[in-house]
Length: 207
Length: 190
Image 1: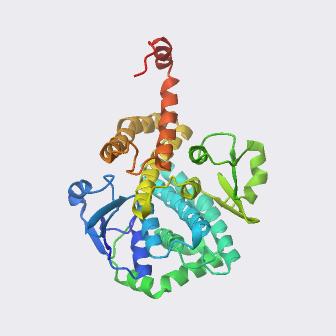
Image 2: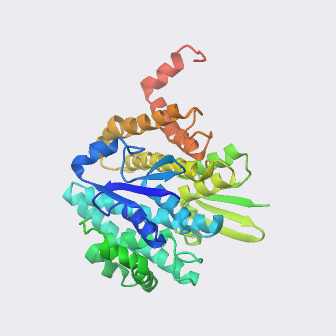
Image 3: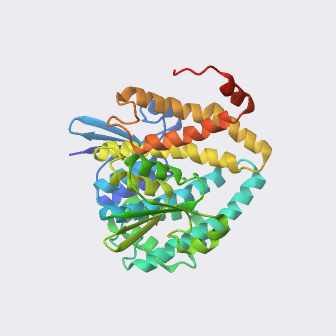
């Protein structure tokens, strides 16, 4: 019996995809959240000096893992949310990487200090980068028959996509306006009983 | 019999880590390189509108997918260069992601057009980002006993790290004063 402890700030941000996977899998874990002032103490325990990090207790051994998307892939595989077979698993990872790219672009906009440049980056993100990616993903879902990104059903890539749509906040509705398959996927995932429960009870944080 | 076809521009860029994996595995594949002018025609044929793309032909079926690291992980698993067991495999991926963060910084610097900003980014990379990452990775290698990033031996994460360091190495080597010293210095093994 493995025990899982997830360590992160009290925020959704880069840890939320992992929490969504635990929720979808109905898997218990310790959702450890520390304050900014406590970070120097936790940083020492983190495998790469970064958060989130996962600690797994397995057969009396402790295994620690860093890098949010690597943690997501690891737990998704453990809980059968990674796709079926090597090829589909690679397809799921491809979608995961694509969503990760979007997230990194959004983070780049968010942390840009120069206001002119930030407006430029924001414009490019919302007018080009985001719609182009959403259009491609919408097409893939349409093609599948399952209503999810891959044929076998719900995977962590769908959860990651829903997660990033959340990051858009009040811009989400407009972004999805022309993409009916994405809209359906988003609604379907958010109303999945275990996920709906998590969305309801999770700590409310700004980011 | 599985056939592999890798599609990319004629450059190392984001495809080289994949080519290094094929090389380390001694695995044949078609290393397909196209010119920039051909890209607009090829783009709609790719799974996500980007490259590299790997095509795998197996039992008469063709499977195509993109995203350089997804491809790297897939082929590394097929050729036993992904680590042993779920936990070590995840550890390898963690190092792969860490090296990717370094690689993306390098690309950001490389493609920055504003000269002042480029120098700022380069300074931060050389004085903070790179040394911090290397210090952590160096510590991991020291702890292992294998001389590689993970205990079981060579994995794709080592190949990726080698590629990024090699890129840096070549940039340093192309510095005129360094190049001059490398030319003049006595040749010794160590």
